[in-house]
Image (cartoon, rainbow, N blue to C red):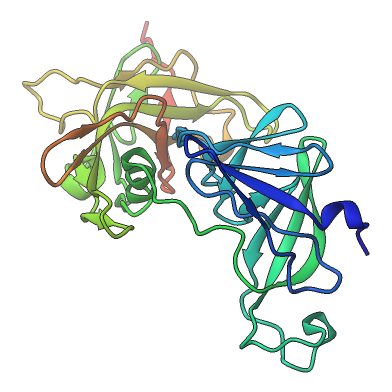
Amino acid sequence: MLNSSWRTAICVMVGAGLTFAVVPSASADGPVITPCAERTICTSDHQTTTVPGTPGSTSGGSGGGGSAACTWQGREVPCWIDNRGAFSAGCYYIEASPQPLATETVWGTHTSKDGKIYDKSCILDDGFVPAGQVFLAQPVAARPPKSPREVARDALTTITVGEPVLHAAPADNAVVGSPVWLWIEPDKNVTGPLSSPPLHEDDGGPTVITTITLKQVHWTVDDGPNPNAPFQEFICQDGGTVFSRTGTPTCSHLFTQSSARMKDKAYSLSVRFEWQVTARTIDNVPIDTTGFRWTTTGSQVLRVPVNEVQVLN
């Protein structure tokens, strides 16, 4: 049971100069939860302060869905994390799903008519530690509306990229020192551009469309029969052009050794796509996607046998 120092708190409305007494939680053993809504500073009597700030940015390579800025023991923490819920006094609270059975002891003397059970996790060093479940008569805070940038990030994850089909010419009689023409079978569902369906997540919030445009194709080729051998990587600026005897490749690779020592006597090639990410609202207002990184990887392995040049005397 937490001591009584947790059982009193005051909320001071920023700019309004009003002070309100906060009614303790209906839980007999749970902490006092002080909702930290927009423009509110919640201070408990053990001198820990939570200060909501402005919505934080979302990095394209990161997850977690952190939103807004609060402080805890002198450092900034998200006021909301999608898989942990709302922040208060060093811990996060999110509605348990499914809710425990009515007969489970976590309800104490309460029922579902009185409130709900929340999963609690608390900050520990640079991570989190589960802290069980608690009953709360009301949520700590509702999820804040997502910024256009956050919605753009969510829309990005809905885009499906087709499976690339890889080609090489010559396909089975390449020789050392002669470029091998490489391309990906033309298909807009593979090489794009590709856009998400319009995504709208909050009442009154933006409807966003995110688009990915192929930036580079990273080709990987194995460099030895040993599974621990290094891989070579080379980059092409597009998906390549379909082979033509009179054309010029936009993507090719020069092999400097034969594939005689390789498994199946052929080099194995695979691809990874690097995409440029842009986003806009349905009203055509651009959204900042700086820092968004998006890559997709094909599952096909293209095998290319490479022979030594035979010199006749």
